[in-house]
Length: 157
Image (cartoon, rainbow, N blue to C red):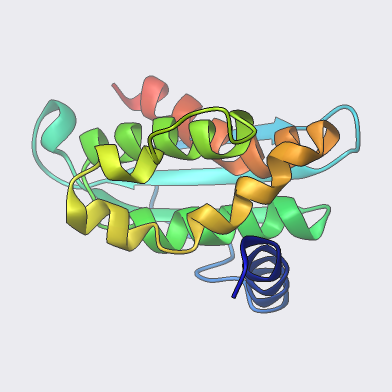
């Protein structure tokens, strides 16, 4: 399967059957992000588990997304991959995903190769979004949920 085919299948699968969708309680913080270019929106709630700093687990990440299939699928992949992971892992995953969708194939190192193997495995569907880099107007769509996660992590720090 080539990357373009993986891109289409992953986007379609996650947008048709979003994982862990819907806002849940309790939560520590709630953030809302809007893409002013296309109107996509995501509300994300984050509930942290016990611990300190980067070791705290993301006990629950819930979201409500409205907009294009790319923004909804990206949020679905993110939540499925990161629920239960640590704050430090979430920060690493954000950086890797950001590189995947913004580098347009200009980097020689796969961003997932820089992550711990279990985290890279959890982000198994993320490489499908590399195809977004060819469509600059869609990059913000793919990053919308991830940007909300980054903001929530800052607010809970």
